[in-house]
Amino acid sequence: MTRKTVSIVCFLGAAPSLFAAQIAFDCVTIPANPTARPLDCDDLAHPFYDPLWCTCLKTYLRENVAGDPAAVQQAIIEVVRQPTIGKYVLTVKGGTLELGALSADDEIGQLLIDAPIPGQAERFLLDFQLVVTAGSETEVEFDVIVRRTNATSMSILGYNPMDAAHAGGLTYRGKATSFGVNGGFELIFEYVLADQLPVGATSTGIQTGDLLAPGFSIPVLITFPTIEIYTLPSAKILEVETVVDQLFTDPVNPVQRTFAETLDLATNGPKPPAAPADLVAVAGDAQAALDWADNAEADLQGYNVYRSQTSGGPYAKIAGPVAMSAHTDAGLTNGTTYYYVVRAVNAAGESLDSSQASATPEAPAPAFRRGDANGDGSLDLTDPIFVLGFQFLGGPAPACFDAADADDLGTTLDLTDGIYSLQYQFLGGPAPPAPGPAVCGADPTPSGFPPCVYDPAKC
Image 1 (cartoon, one colour):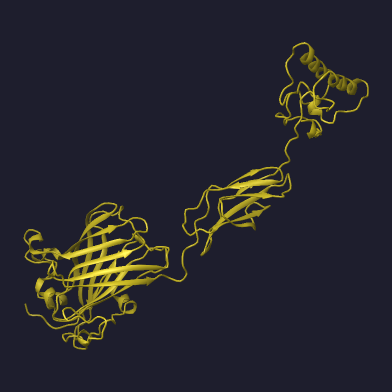
Image 2 (image 1 turned 135 degrees about the vertical axis):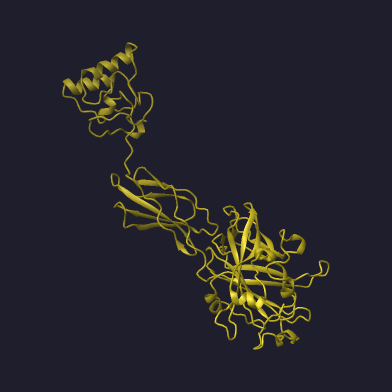
């Protein structure tokens, strides 16, 4: 074929208009005449000097906030009359790549060649997509296919890269492998050899000759993924290793370059933790016991506890950060309702509020012995005499009416309480109801009596 000499910029991942501003192809200087070899390639002191293969690679993040969805972008420069990429291996050492929801035909990456052409209104354009062909939760296979071009580009190439003879645009095949939660991922793609082409195709989307010895230097931008399936780690750095092989490199002695880089994530660091879940508050005597589910964040610093006497707040902080997912709020006023929320804490700050929980502390019900009317600590003949004396002879009132209420009718003391006590003690009648005469305890049934006063020393 006859080909005009142009400078082609190869982009992978986002709108062409954004790349010039976002990506700096400055590791090798492309000369004004793109068909001339860059001088950097022959500078022995230059860090990218290689007598066999002059190339460079720089990695960027399209979004770089720790813990956020992101895409990895790489700027690669392929040099005039030198073989281009035959195999590409990108290893990202951190973050989480989710592959389980992908289906066949999903587009997960892009290779976009987009460059101005001197004297031409239309740009040179080849838009490749990484198209899923099969996969699982841990690995997907994909084809790299030319999906878009234009008449000017086909004129320069001398063929249509998307026709059947050119395998419908198929140029590379690859796979993406996820290493699990925060394990990172590996992306590999390789040039499709002749014996791997679809039936009827005589070439890949880009003919071999155009890849073995391009007539111009080509800056390339690679981005993966182009959909939100990768999340950056919460750590503040990300390690990336890339190995790029020349086309048709010797498998025993490959002509390749390895690039190891460390990327700094955004300085605003990790996100605040999630709001604590399942908060409950249990009332006690002048206190409330709070409990909630543990947060899962590895960088959690504890929890702050907030309280209000108004439902919905405003809340005042009363404790924190506490290490455990529980807290007892003491020194409260019995009979007052208190409202609580909890917030988880890490270096980024506090979470949102948990759901609200409330508690109304109450003094515990007094313990007493049922039937011990005179409060001497035991049930005997003196107790029904005490009750009858109070009822009919003007004797002193019981300090604990509930204890004197031997039959637990709970409304008033009368003759039946004395009779009930005597029958139990001397005629085999039923024992006084709970808590009974043998042990002290709270009254399990409400009554209309005055508050019980019973000497704890008698229990």
